Length: 448
Image 1 (cartoon, helix red, strand yellow):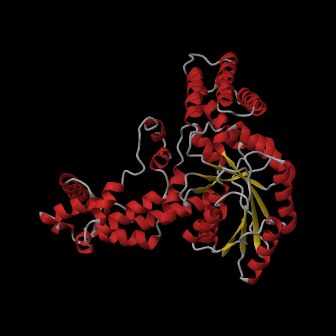
Image 2 (spheres, rainbow, N blue to C red):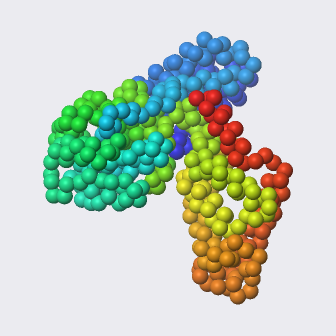
Image 3 (tube, rainbow, N blue to C red):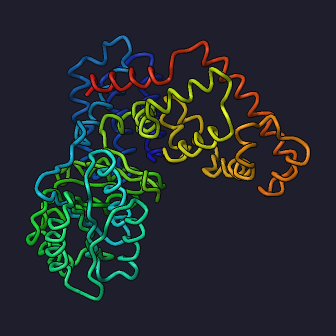
């Protein structure tokens, strides 16, 4: 995500930092290169020009030329303007009404149905809501089945009317069903088309008028670049949607949609989606995205992802086991599964300042844990709790059961023993993990 843009911007700033003396001329040259970088990232031309003009005005106004570290000051100005371009601050989602109603819109293939499941899971977990998903895509083959599978995986009901081709009526009756069954949140998944057409727009506008949603979210594939902005404008002209969702931000996207869409339609980007996993949803924070674009990492989001998978009681239990050297393969397997839930491993590593650039050309397999998981799952429950008994024929059985060579099982046992000893030593020296989590939450609360 944004790798090419980040590289181009870094080269642009090197032009400025490499000068023995900073002048208005080389500031202008640097910003000219920045504008080219934005255009190459498929940012709207008008947006790119306005952006660089604003940066130049602020740079000269803040006397970059006479600053002690003019290159760093320029980076800060660009960072602040990038964040402002994308909205400045995170936009909340409106949950009001009985029930609260969210209408999903977007083209076919944008990831709208998958994101519907992600949003239901997030709001159910974080706000304690009782969602109802509504299948109003009555045209795409298997669309209703896809929504049912997603809903079943998060234990959420789906309202469908098999064989009925009246999405407006389905949506209206779904709201009554939600009231009867005390669902306090309704998320309506609508049909998309391969391109914007009058029939689609008329239909979704009729659904909006029938159910009067509190939120209308426009879901767009970030990989479509400038086309995403044009599509957003067409939808906004008809629906006056309340927010944008950018999906597939973990793909080979140049970032133009994220940087342009806010300025063109004047509506906030509320969420971003990554991957097919239902955990792949994040609130959109413009400042954090600006950090990522400029290669500064995003440690706050990384901490929040970790906190979402760990609670204080669990952290206390792990700390206790580490102090007593009782950390087992059962605990280890649970930690691996929680790390995987946080998202793509390479994306997570890139959130650490300085790491993103270092690993950009490194192929990190997101299935790297599969072999380890297979070996642990091939152990008996007793063996997982008492790894010291695993030797001889037990090793051979585990190797055969997991499809891994004996030498790999022995390597896992040796490495686990070393890790356990190291973690035991560190846990007796450092602070309590649960206390650290409490402190991080307090710091983030003050930041907000």
